Length: 68
Image 1 (cartoon, rainbow, N blue to C red):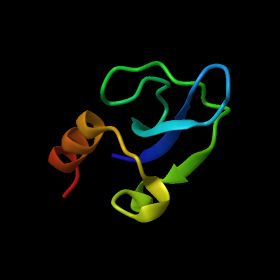
Image 2 (image 1 turned 90 degrees about the vertical axis):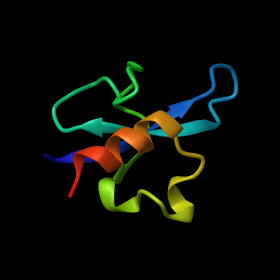
Image 3 (image 1 turned 135 degrees about the horizontal axis):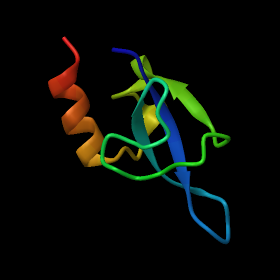
């Protein structure tokens, strides 16, 4: 299954709140948040790198259980 990482931004300042993992073709993160798909995105292989921090703990845990 394909995944990608999408940024969740804060409301007034539009600064990064945290990154979430999303399954391909969906607009809801693995933790259940509905995200704005026009926000910055990263490939799934950025998970665990400095570039993808801070990362949603729930998305990360579910992603680990879903990928080989």
